[in-house]
Length: 231
Image (cartoon, rainbow, N blue to C red; front, top):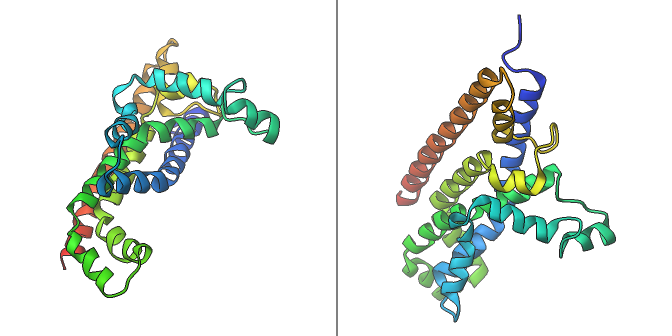
């Protein structure tokens, strides 16, 4: 009995899940930071910061991939130094695929978390402050738990976006089998060869199934978190 997926297809699925999972982990700290800054602080240039943070949502992904190549390629502004000083190579590796996914998914996480921060009752934080809690304790014990629905939604949206990333990935890390060929890149490759329509369709269905499961899980967890917060 033939297996449902051949080794190359399984490798693409595993790599996609690995890249998307790591992208969410990397997105969380800057996502929470920028969401809090944009939600709570007023400062000159805030509109510009907001625009730059959300730039990947409006720019063609290929443009973002080329910008990453200019920055992190072996001859890039930062990539050249990483190569010479630390021996770290990002472009054309799976680590670069994670970077591309992070860049494209981060705005979605920031928007979701920021919305949760905006909806938090500031009176609760002020009350904790009057009781002697410091800013970090207020953030860790009140603000962040109350923003849990946004964190869950943002994380799963970032996962789904990372799973489907194509343009920035193929521009920055190419389409290398076993190294950077994620599901979208594998589908693209299969559509270029004779007889690849069937395997491409299988991978399309896998991507759709994972994305739908992520969105359903996001909605379910967000509702449960909201119910727990409301008591």
